[in-house]
Length: 313
Image (cartoon, rainbow, N blue to C red; front, side, top):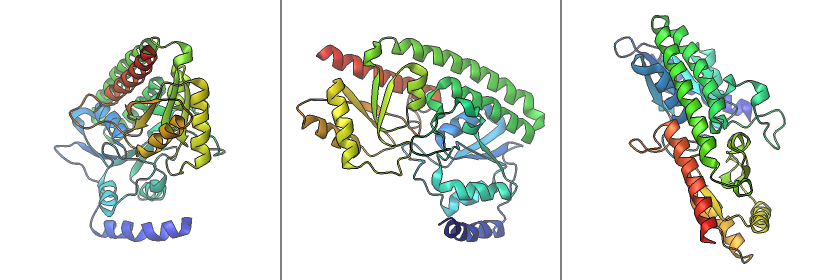
C-alpha cells in the first residue's frame, strides 16, 4: 500500500516542480507559509504577525484525519517557504506528501511534536503512537508557540525578535486562558465531569481539567463505530445517568444521534448538549474563529449543557 501511495504522489510532485513551484518570498518581504489545519494556521498567524503570509489548507468543519491533499494543495505547499502541520499522524492521509515535501527542501514543522514525548497520551489500540489532539490542553498547546517562533526566526532572522516577542505574549495569553478554563469547570461537581463525544479527541482536555472522557469513534475518525461500540457506550450513559452528550463540527452528527437512540431504547433520555469544535476552528467572523475563542466556546457549551440538564432534573 505504501508503495502505491508513493507511486501516486510522485507524478504530482514532478508536475508541480515542472510548473516552477519553488519556495518564494511574497508580499513586501513577507514569509510565505502553508498550514494544514486552521488550528495550526491560527497559531502561526498569531506569532508571525504582519511579516508572515499564512494559508491554511483545511477550513472550518474539515476533518484532518480524512483529508486528502489536492493537486492545488501540493502546488501551494511546494511554493511555500515552510509548511506547519499538526503531526502525530493527525493528517494521516497527507503523511506521504509531507514527507516528500521535506525531501524537496521545504521546511516542514510538526507543531504538536514540539511537545515533549513524556507529556503525550498514548493512543489506545495503536502501540507506539500518540493522541494528536494536544491543543485541548491549553498549557501543552502553548509549548508549540516557541517552536513556531524559532522556525520563523530561522527563516527570517531580521524579524526574529518580533516573532519571539509575539510568542511570549501569546504564551501569557494562553496561561490566562488555561486559568479561565480551570475556574469555569469548577462550576461542575467532580461527578458531573463526564464528557461523551463523537470521537475520542478530548483525552488531553480530560486529563488537564478533570473530566472522564468517552468517544464513540476512536482517536481517528477513519475507524467506523460498530454496533457493539454504540451499545457499550449507551450502557455506560444509562448506568452513570449522563445527562448530555455532544456532537462535533467536523464529524457527521449521525454517530451521536444513533447513540442517543440506543440510550432512549433503554428507557433513559440523554440530551445532545451542543456542538463542539474538535479538529477545526469555527467560521471566520464568529467567536470561535481563533483558538482562544474556540476553547472558550467549547468550555461554555460543555459546562452550560451539563449544568442546565442537571438543574432540569
